[in-house]
Image (cartoon, rainbow, N blue to C red; front, side, top):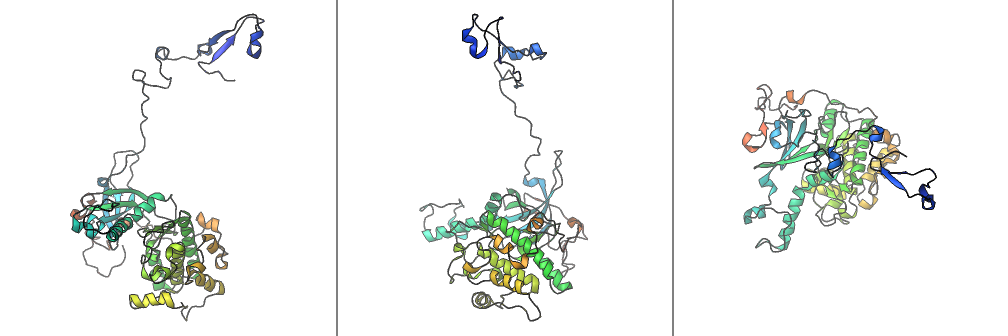
Length: 445
């Protein structure tokens, strides 16, 4: 048994009983305490006079000092430079931001996709009119003149505006989803620092292929669809539904694999209260997302994403949408009442036709994947896919994005004015890369 400093040791004279028989002995037991000195251990004398633990480095105060954290401190907005605009949405803009701080040995010039939202767009119009700042949840009588129905609409508005951040912070890290690093704000805008995915979108892959070859090959479409299946398997395993799946919201990583982004319309599967109908992009909306259809999306929540994945698969194979009209009403009627058809110049095999048919089943209760992504993975059209190998990215992607430095490319979109992003430093590019309408038809960058 190892010796422990401070442990009692027993010593007795010859013939004395030690241990369980000690009560039979003639001589009383004598005890000593291991001091460690008999083994050559040396200790500071201060420890003998102070009643403090031995690991205390400051016996005078009796406090254990907090060890110094070797990690760099959290970033703040002024630590970032805005280099270019990556894209624009209805409410927001996405900037390429780079860390400019060099105060810590571990500070590196990392880049982020910085999603920006104006504060005035975040506020609900009814709140602005009443002069009441947003507070999240609204009690029954908190705003004079606002009825219960309006308060529910206002609450739903703020849930939607906060939806992406709330969804991402609750998700574990995954190679199939853009992660969130940090959130910032200044007097004009709210910001989210997201993982930067450098290879463009699946939409650009489809468009470039259409320009060169007309459409993706079946093998390439199968690879990308398998990526989407694994991404949805992860997402649905976390009980989250994307609700706005489309090629523009699927990014291409540096290794050629796909990554889901834009969770602004995401819903938790267990949420039966929020408004599910009418959200998403029209051409990728499932029939149950329209008000006149029953059952509702909440009844089979995951089926919404699998419908959209079927539309994307059809689009990758044919470069066409299965349901499309000249107006909103024509498109809505096509989704609700019309059977999709392959183009006349496209020959689909039996298994391919079967998987698309089940993904685009009009009734959510009959749709492939509604219970589990495993049902999709087991389909005959995907039997050649080794899912473990795909999950660890063991396949060579059909398209590997070029590794050119994006900061040295021409700016497709103009940078924001400095007073629009007061907390973020805008870095002006060289004159030959600046966006100034000299090349209005230029599309790269």
